[in-house]
Length: 168
Image (cartoon, rainbow, N blue to C red; front, side, top):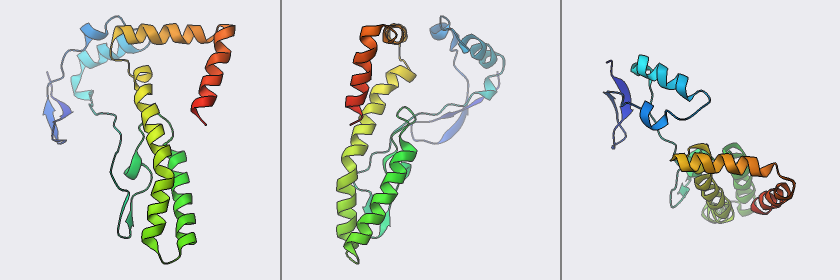
C-alpha cells in the first residue's frame, strides 16, 4: 500500500500508511461511500490536516500587528473570517487616525474593541463543529432531526429568533 502524507504531533509532515476508515463511516450516505472506495483504492491521494483556531494573547508587539486569520482565525466552521478581517483593518485604521503618533494607545484600544467579537465568533465556531464535523453517529442523527424540525411552522420562528439574538 503506498504511503500517504500525515501530520505528526509536532506539526511536521511525514509519509505514513492510511488507516482503514470504512468501518466507522460505512453507514453514512451522500458521497461518503464513494470517497471511502477511492481512499481504499489509492491511499496516496489522502491528505490529512486539521481545522483549528488561532488564539494569541496579544495581536501586536511594538509596531508589528497581526490582522485577520493571522491574529484570530475563527475557523471554517464559523464563516466570519473575511468579515472580521475587514472590520479589524477598518477599526485599526480608525484607531491609528484617532490616536495620531500614540501607536501603543491606538493598538490597545483597537484590540480591546475587537477582542469580544472575535471571542464570540470563535465560541460559535466551536459549537458549529458538531454540525459540520459530527464526532459520532448520534451527532449525525441529532443534526438530521434538527434539520427536519426546522421546517415545522412553530419551530421555524423560534430558530429564526434564536439566530437573530445570537448575531446581535
